[in-house]
Length: 422
Image (tube, rainbow, N blue to C red; front, side, top):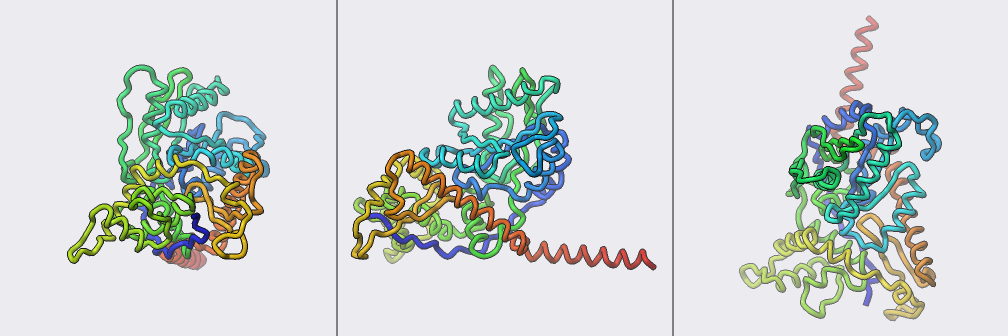
């Protein structure tokens, strides 16, 4: 039986994690872009919206306008003075279901016509070859340029260095040593890399950059959810979140992804049913894994850590590989659960997209199903953009510390102006 009500859990206030090397790179970016031809922005496929780094958006838009793109029509270039491309790579594609990729591409093409979007995984040679060919083709469009310079940017732990290593191995024949160190922990790359050659003919060079987190994750429910999402993909330094908080949100998300047979059922005893009760779930998991404290009490703290670790290592693959829901069967108009009417269901794709479905949404064909998903995704993108605009207008994306620093700077400037007038 499918879950019909999946409430979002209470989430903790997000911590602040913005080390000095991130601030340094943010300040360097405008100067770096003056000698950049292609920006390769790496995002996490599970968080295609949350892993957008809004801190860098202003510099990227200015770069495009200075290179001749029309501010009023993102898809039109007024003046072509050389290569200027922004390519969005949704990395770790094997961790999201295949059925949502094409609707997502179409939704992004409608909402962001200035961005080229592709899914990739360093474990899939075809994806790396496709990305390599795209960069080579951009270089060939500008034969008078001696080389093409690519800047790779993104949030921590989205796989920038790993993807670049795979790109180098694909573009340079023969044995090539691993160019960049990689780690499962965020923050390993703390400075702009030296140039890495990824193609010989034409010449293409790439720069790896430090992962840059948002200086402040936001306030209220939106900020809290944003922080937990990034912590779940290990994009925030380990230890800044309690594992039970992460486990509660992960349970919620896996229920949304598949309210009939969520991936975590593989961890529970045979015959277990989907649940929204975190304590009940962790108790079942602890007993199944033999995590027992003194007094025969299940160790739910260890179970929460095991649940999160399982999802990062193999559970994400299991969730992504599961068959898509049979919408027609799920949404068949029939009285259910003694409600006297057919229930609505919460469903989603990745961790950034979710929507409600009822019998009226029952698709007649696979094409209708794809159009339905695309429309729901476009609605989610609109909601995300509206929330970001609201946060910026109300200054909800600025921390109290940042506000205090700004007030101090403004006061110093006023004092300086008064002194100069004397």
